[in-house]
Image (cartoon, rainbow, N blue to C red; front, side):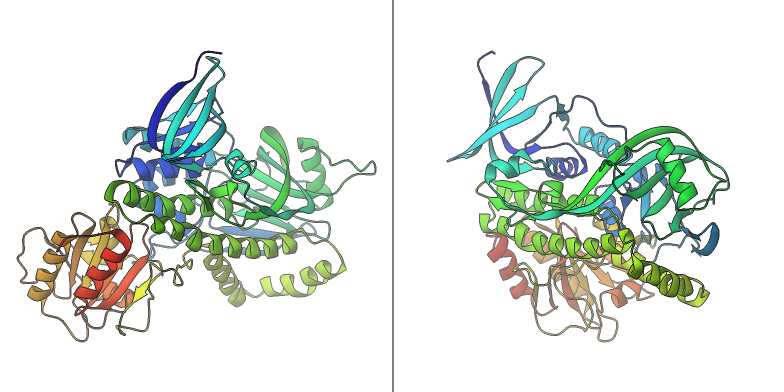
Amino acid sequence: MSAPTSSRTDVLIVGAGPVGLMMACELRRRQVSCRLVDKLTEFPATSRANGLQPRSMEVLDSLGVAERILEGANPVRGVVVMRRGAEVARLELPLPSAEPDQPFPRVVIVNQAVIEGVLRTKLAALGGCVEGGRELTGFDESAEGVVANVADPTTNSTERITARWLVGCDGPHSLVRKQLGLSFEGSQYPENLILADVHLQGDLPNGLAMLWLNDEGLLAAIPFREPGVWRLLAAVDTDTTDQVPQASVEVFQRLLTDRGHDTRITICEPLWLSNFRVHHRMVGHYRKGHAFVAGDAAHIHSPVGGQGLNTGIQDSYNLAWKLAAVILRGAPEVLLDTYEAERLPVARQVLKETDVNQRLAMAHNSVAEFLVNHVAVPLLSHASLREHVTDAALQRSSQLGVNYRSSVLSERHVHVGAGLQAGDRAPDGAVLDDEGHRTSLFTYFRSTEFRLLIFQGHSRRGDAQALGEMARRTQSCSRGLLRALLVVVDQTPEVALQDVTVLSDPQLGAHTSYDARSAGLYLVRPDGYLAFIGPATDEAALMDYLDRHFGAIGS
């Protein structure tokens, strides 16, 4: 082996799945020096995870790639529920139009390979790349951060990379987590899952998933965008020899007959087959020294409900802007402790919810049979109840309700409304730009700065010119940390200030979403959560907040 070479970077990211790619994209668009290594030499083409929740779509929209993701997605609009060969219910909702405060109203079914491909393309446009065939073999803490050994088997060489920060996005078997000595508490579920991406022929619904209610265990199918291609998912028990059946066309065909009482559907050639054991585990800490873990390296849970991929992407979204603030702006390093403080409770709640989903979906005993026959089937038989049940389930899994209200970064000053709290997701809103064209708040969230929304107020209006002066002043003093947006009520406000973005809200939709009855300040973090809420008279408190958490911002 040749002598090790040496190099430096600000952040070394290990693992080029969606979590690592998101981390690299977020850092690169802030001009942070980073490297992304992965031991694989070829990018996987299999689907693996395949559901993006509404909040994740908002995150990807802020990166400017949501439309590309949607181009490769399948608009699944509901599910057909079968029981003993007969249709029990059709939970079919019309594809909803986007709401002004929620532009992505439903889960998006899309192949994980498509997500990764879009993010790799975005990373390349930002000047980054995936370094494939590069494997982390170990690392040590140093005075400057982390010194990592990265092996390249193709050249039989090792590179010693000195990085200020290391982020392990290297999955459930994470070397980063293991070397840090982080606990990964939890256990394995007793059920065995088999999965397959296959071509199906037969009596299949258009644009709807299928769920076969039965007494033997989970059996479901989800359509992909490609015509005739479906994901099959089933829970299986060990056979008489205590062996787990391997996923195959024959096994799934038998399950369709035995559990689904369905002989009309024929399984054709498979694209991917996999056996899968489900674990629920999470770390006790997300950071140790100059290293972090994110995604499956930090938490793994049941796939029922489609939360894993989404939680990991949002881990990266939370950490990346904080790393950039420390590296580029000299923000206090204690800011990085808020990554664990904010994301660990989210992972704990996700594990709790997916554990319930897993137990309900996999149960096959007398209690489960009673629930299916006497609760689920009767409930699904009533059209008026079906829509409420479906909406509640979709909202529960959307991750739009994730908040950081208990974070030290969330501050609310003096009552300005009873709605949003500091730490909540900042909603979208339909507004008009300075030329009267329709636009949205999220359009202005596709940047890397904090956004200071200064609302004029719809009941007790503030002076637009004075608020505009405040917008100019706070934006100037922040030295590029924030961008101020003045949201006024009138369609043609008489505000003329250089470098101030003025948006009109004549229908009061955005004011209502933010509960901005009087003039107020709403500071939105780079990851789309409300950091500070206060009345328009709290300019000094806002500047003090920015100074305390992110360093001196100027006089």
